[in-house]
Image: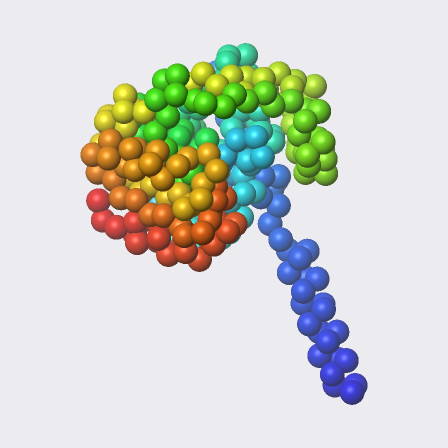
Length: 276
């Protein structure tokens, strides 16, 4: 019995040690820094060494920490760079309305700030759309793209309108957003940021005018039951990109990497390692 209790104590101690050692992605002083994007300072974190991979997170609920499963695996062989979008976490908001072009230009400025020749770009949801826009606008700096949770969104095609507010989001996930507000350099402007984010969703678009300009290899990855992008929307996007592959994760919604990370990882791994 004493031996059993001794082993149990060791197991509990080891578990607590692992919990204490969990990396605070999105708020990591050892990995974080800022760069000047013109009208705003944006936050980013860097992990590992090797060929660069730029990670672009989703919107509203999205932040760097959503890539917690990806970062340690990718950082084994790559330099992993995680950008915090305007109005999210430790990045500022700036003075200009949000657009996908603006987000792509912010990503391009970070690549230039870090003096990188090019990078593999992985994006989810808003970040996936930004990755595709970046590849279309600045093909010289994008080696390949993995875009998750994206689809064809032609101009004036949106059927739903968004009206996000601080009151709404705090009502839905109080603890989560209160913790994010503690990171924000301008928490008093959060409602303003959410209004601009809603306008981005309601008014901006991403379709053939962007997709047809992409020159690099692209892997599109969506869940079979994505709540925001239908399989038809995904396939329209796939057919418009000259050098694209597509992967559908069965029985998953928008958050494919929380639904079935092993399937997501096994789908993207050979694409990342492929020789251009």
